Image 1 (cartoon, rainbow, N blue to C red):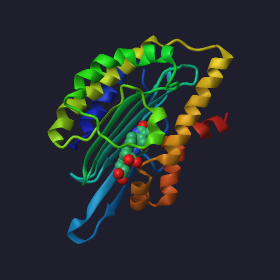
Image 2 (cartoon, rainbow, N blue to C red):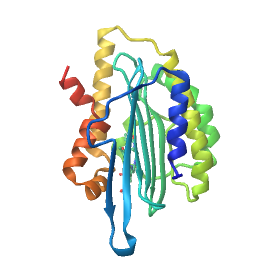
Image 3 (cartoon, helix red, strand yellow):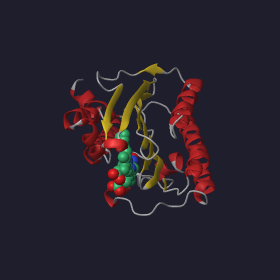
Length: 247
Ligand code: DBV
């Protein structure tokens, strides 16, 4: 059992318990991809597996799980709501590299500086955020241009100990997901055309940023080549633009 498997398992169970979870199609070649990397006795298999689901309110729930030995483990898990809901994105980037663990967990807002929006989607998370801040202190430097895409309850931390990931980070992940799924349950469809247009713009802004700046691009390109990587990013991980183009 690798470090982030329990995160993936618990997320899928939580979703299944509360929603009618349907499969979301994963393009050919992305369900599972593996490469042998390194030389001599440092050779290691790097396996990337993908998971994707949908519900009536959630356009795409998807995960990329990278397993490459004890010093390379990644779970990137994002929920993209349908465009007729003003729900934030659920975003988790759980990364273990030779340099250590890097954890990003957030309900990523569509409208960062809107106080009514914060009241609805940030305030309910605040007590949980506060509760974990002692064990999961602020992780320091992170790209300033990414700032607009994170909420005030962004958990960003670099645990020194793997045991912290297995305990506090897992608990925080479960708590954040539970609150997010409460939001989903309560969400009502939006009908106002101006609001719908603003949601689509905000989703596209987020999508384009993430696809363009994907911090995993270098890693995936080294393992699997650039053709596979670009297709994975635009055709699966951050696919909204292509989906809209096809409507
Ligand atoms: N990040 C992804 C996907 C990944 C992934 C799809 C499947 O968006 C992994 C894999 N993230 C990943 C890896 C690294 C990071 C780092 C492998 C390490 C890159 C490296 O050091 O080589 C949050 N993830 C990061 C960083 C941040 C995030 C801030 C540090 C990157 C840096 O300092 O430049 N989550 C990430 C992010 C957003 C988000 C940037 C933006 C909205 O939601």
